[in-house]
Length: 324
Ligand code: F6P
Image (cartoon, rainbow, N blue to C red; front, side, top):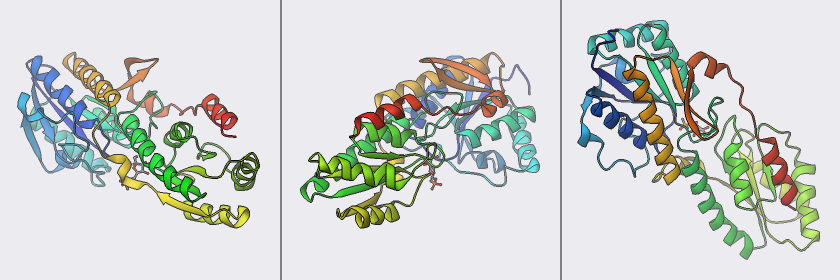
């Protein structure tokens, strides 16, 4: 790829997240400000396989900062995840004449960016996923909005749980990561929080706790279950059988993935998008942008992918301590 090329491409990949649009906007504006042409690639890596790209201008990203979803659409591409797919995408990037590609998504998307970098197209990843499960970054775009959505929903559920003296089991997203469950569990005053990173013995962690708090006068209960633990309907039935308290289960699902991004998501997305462009302008690729100790930094993609996520045990212990 020519370092003198004056174009870059940007795509969103994997599950969408509120704030992706703010990142796309920042990439487009920062690039145009540096006299680069910008191509928007549609539907993740698929757009590089079937030539589905549009040239972006300053106005193509107007009025998107406040919208959830992604104007570039997104997908998980099976065809791209083959050596032939990567080569085809790299050849297409060369034909387009781009000096690099900004990839907004999670770990799966970064593996794609690493492979494309390996095929000669410098890529920069930006963590965009509601799960907050990118090990190298203390924050991923979309996390704050998703948690605030959960909070709003659980506050509503609490109203009806309170009226009926019930227990409500609420399942939130996060297949391998309990961050949404942990933080929303704290913020909505849950009696129990079940996350995939910790043992989740229903008798000691949920039933005994409900019975103990009931003995102190508590009459309604919220139990937050991460998707990675799952089984919220069965958990609700178990609680009802063991405690005699009427219990309902709610799976919040994809409502958590939409909605207008919060201030935090818009600001982090903008700073990360800007940083990604600075890297590509300087012909630096094969990097992931991350937030570390509140600062926007960048790391080698392979190094970033090899990092192990650290669950916040301290916050978890605080949650356990006060949910009595
Ligand atoms: O990674 C984000 C996420 O929302 C996870 O929390 C969830 O497990 C998954 O995506 C759902 O994916 P899909 O939209 O393909 O059902």
